[in-house]
Length: 271
Ligand code: ATP
Picture 1 (cartoon, rainbow, N blue to C red):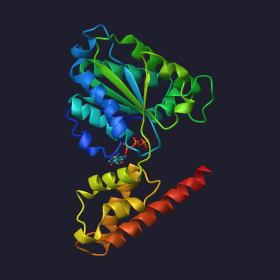
Picture 2: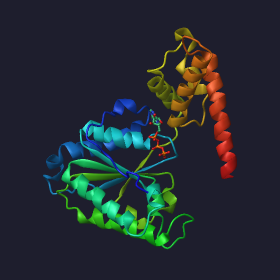
Picture 3: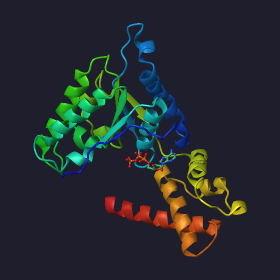
Picture 4: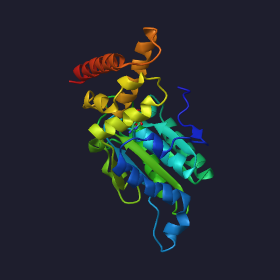
């Protein structure tokens, strides 16, 4: 496939303000922002800046968003690729993509490399995988480890990877000097869901006295940030379809029902 696997977003606009909740995770990644902005401060006493951090958590909880916000806050370019893109590749292509990616990121350093779904390439070696060639996957993983070990402490590139399956990852990835920091990104609690609603309601024309974000948060236990973003969008479409001038409470309830229906279907396929 000719799909573009990574794109450099020289001007990332995402900031921590776009990431609701996740206070603990934001605090941890703030350190990465500082390393990128002010490396000398940290290396002055002989310390080495970490090369990688692993964001671990369920789908849709804001891992990609958080990684982008790190780049936005540090004002550095963001290079990204997804592990699942490698699955269909021919032998040798995965490793060369990884090489290209690191080369570009080093040229533009300080910078961030984001690898989504790292489990697709980072599964423990020697364990079979139902999709794609295992040799190719292992070559890609080996190249990734080689690149990470290869950069010196003067290369100000930080690799952030995300997974919802930390349990299947090759332990070699977590070794010192690689993804030795793990940051948990959990499903939002009640208060965090309220905050996520506040972020995603901003662009939406809501019927003012009808919408109470505490009420919406209570209606959505188990929802991820992505689910909540979906509810807000769906509610706006439902109201617009009816020809209404603003989005009301019932539109949100209908949207929640629709998303719950979708989630139930997904779960049925999995189990
Ligand atoms: P996946 O594991 O499926 O790749 P992810 O954890 O990387 O998911 P994102 O892609 O970052 O999740 O989230 C998808 C979208 O959901 C975001 O672009 C954003 O609109 C919304 N979202 C998720 N979490 C949050 C949050 N904490 N605050 C605000 N919006 C959020």
